[in-house]
Image (cartoon, rainbow, N blue to C red):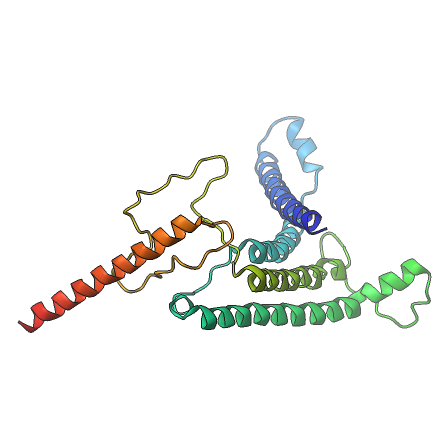
Length: 258
């Protein structure tokens, strides 16, 4: 079930992005080619109406953004500031991470419930009652979009649906972290189809000397799992780099005093 939901999520985002790009491309080509005086072709192009293209693409990008946000929670692609959290001990770090994930689930759950109420009052209840053959009474039919003349409740349904999926993803990541202690991790430098180059053993990618970058090699993340030897080597390397930094700071301090 979870795999099917993952594939559906990815297919939906991919389709919306590709279709919106194609529609905008065709609309732009149509606009410019219709202004070229080509006998026969210009007359045919002028009979085509692409006034709906911009509105449709806006709707598609809104849906793509809502479901793409849920995909981002699942894969760990969202940007987060974790420099302070990674400096805490494992117990406090875990508590802060769980608190942040549950706060995200609470926020998206509230947005989903409020969005569902808005969609219902904006005409969804009228459409559902009419489809089921129930007397609509004085219920509000709801407005439509200017160009496509679609019911706006269908467009706004992206809010409760996308936010509900995002809330589920937050809870899913929280459960996975409580069970394994690992978080989703997305490597922005990785390109599918290409093999990752392994850096030399004596290079510590986290060993920055400006005291602004994280020195966190002991907390594994999903997608970046290491063997026991790699973890031990990483811990030892991190300790050695920290010792060297302390020595350099002491030397600089002593040199400044002299």
